[in-house]
Amino acid sequence: MSDYFQGVDPIAFEGPDSQNPLAFRYYNPSEMVGGKTMAEHLRFAVCYWHNFVWEGNDPFGGQTFERPWFPADTMELAKLKADAAFEMFRILGVPYFCFHDHDVRPEGATLAESHARLNEMADYFEKKMANGGPKLLWGTANMFSNRRYMSGASTNPDPDVFAYCASVVKNCMDVTHRLNGENYVLWGGREGYETLLNTDLDRELEQMGRFLSMVVEYKHKIGFKGAILIEPKPQEPTKHQYDYDVATVYGFLKRFGLEDEVQVNVEQGHAILAGHSFEHELAMARTLGIFGSIDMNRNDYQSGWDTDQFPNSPSEATLAYYEVLMAGGFTTGGTNFDAKLRRQSLDAEDLIAAHVGGMDVCARGLKAAHAMLEADALEGPRRARYAGWESDAAQGMLAKGATLEGIAATAEAKDLDPQPVSGAQEKLENIVGRFI
Ligand code: XLS
Ligand code: NI
Ligand code: NI
Image (cartoon, rainbow, N blue to C red; front, side, top):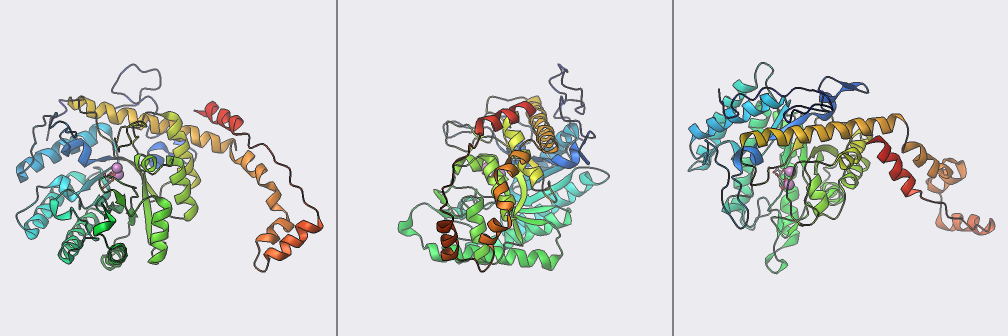
C-alpha cells in the first residue's frame, strides 16, 4: 500500500454548495441522467503518463516535481509508482485508467527484457485490478519517445524499426487483452514528416496502412473484443502528422478498407491544434460512424501548443457531451483525462484537485447536454431548418436516377427564386447558455 496521498479520503459528492476543495460538487456517480448513471455515461479514466511519469519539465527548464518513485528506472520504483497510481485511482473513485508500456516499466536492455518487464507489471496490475479495482480503458505503446523512433514508427525508412514496432505493439496488445482492456489506442506522434526533401510519402502511407491492417488482423486472432482507436493530431512532435484530424483519418481508413474496424479517440487539444473545435471533431466522427472515445483536456488558446490542461469550461464540456450523446453515448470508449498539472503545482493534492475539478466540469456538461436533448432545444430548431427536405419532391432530388439536368429543368420551369432565412445563431447560443 502506498501513502503518497497521505490519507486523503475517497472523494465524496457533497453538492454544489460545498466549500470543500476535495469534494465533488456536480459529479455524483450514482445519479441518474436519462437511463444511465453519471458514472456509466462518463466512464472516467485517469492517464498514467501525465500524472506519474512527467517530471514537470518544459523546453526551458527541467524537473520541478519530486515524487518518491522518480526516476523510476528500476522495477522496484516502477512498482512504487504503480502503488501511488492505484492509490489515486481509489481516492478519485474512477472506474478506469490508461497507460503506455513506457509509462509503467523501465525499458530493458533488450526487446525481450522490455517485454518481460511489461508482463511483470501487468501481473502486478492484475492483482490491484481484481475485486472491483479500476479497469483498463485502453492500453497503448509509446513509439515516439525513444530516439529509435525519431524518423517514424511504422513509417520509418528503416524496415527494422517497422519490425521492432510490430513486436512492441503485439506485446502491448497482448497485455491490454490480458488486463481486459476495453480499447487499444494508436497515436502516431512520429508518423509524419519534418521535410518532404527526405520523405517518400507514398511508401510511408503504404507502410502505415499495412501496419494498421495487421494490428486489426491480430486483434481478431487473439479474440480481443475491444475497439482499435486512432487518435488524430495534426502536428507536434512531428511537423506534419498523417493522422491530421478525424476527416483525414477517415479517408485513410477508407483507403485501406478499415473504416468498419477502427474508430477514433478524439482529443480536445488536438482538435484545437487542427484548427477545429472539439465539437466539430466529435460531430464529424459521429457522422462518419467512427466515434470511439475522448481525451478530455483543453488547450491554451494563445500558445498554439498541446498544453494538456484539465478542462474547466462548462460550456465547452456541454457542447462536447452533446455530441457524445448524439452519437449514442460511449460503448467501449470513455472520458480519459489526458491532462497534466502546471509545473508549479507541486503537491500530491494538486493531482487530486485537478481531477476533481475536471470530473465536475464534465458532469456539468453531461447534465446540460442531456437536458438540452430532452427539451429538444437544439434539435427542434434544427429539424425546422431542414424541414423543406422532408417533402417527396426534395427527397427525389437525392434519389438514384435523379440527374443534374432534370433538376435544372424543374428549377427553371418553376422559375425558382429562393429567399434566405435567418440562421438565428445568437438565439441558439442563448438557448445553450440557459442550460449550462
Ligand atoms: C499526445 C497524445 C498521447 C496519446 C496517447 O499528444 O495525446 O498522449 O493520447 O499516446
Ligand atoms: Ni495530446
Ligand atoms: Ni491523447
